[in-house]
Image (cartoon, rainbow, N blue to C red; front, side, top):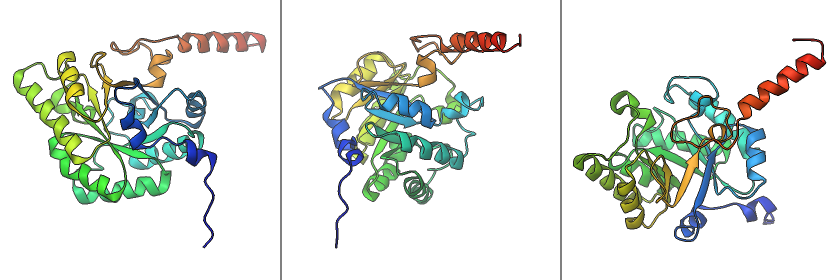
Length: 263
């Protein structure tokens, strides 16, 4: 049998093991990307460790009220385009609402996602209640990024607010973190978790923590690309925009219109 030679993309691809090794070595940099064009720009820099095809595209790209309404097939279509651009970062697919409510459904959908998009890992929201599902996906051979604290897919229950402020809430989040690690996840997102608690979890876990609005003590941070470049107007409170591309685009369109007889 003739073996297929390794390609440059195969050799450069970051794995779950590579991400775990970054803990304590450097801050892990993660960004979302939903399109080929943005993913290509980001990945060519080789400074981003993880690119997430997030269900936040429901709000960012399509103007939906929450992340819960995005269909799986639309996310798959976007991930297929992003995969064509990403050659350096680890590409993670955010499993949308309703696609992992049971072990059987989760495995079926994860297999579909991997076969159709060739992503490197999937992200699952939830803690101890998702431990068995995470374990089964990992056993299947697909790395899992966990996500605890504020769960956007459950905001109808919790709302958008800081997590871990009470003793019971903090205890639950700590238990969730331990369960996600025990299940075999290679990293875990901490969203809107109190800073002292996120620091404790980061110190206790052997896997890296990736923070969203959880202070500076996590092993890394993740942000929505459109937020940090200033396309989202107004920007989320927890995000520092590094430019205002929305305003620049407006100026460009006005100049274009003027030079071409309009406006």
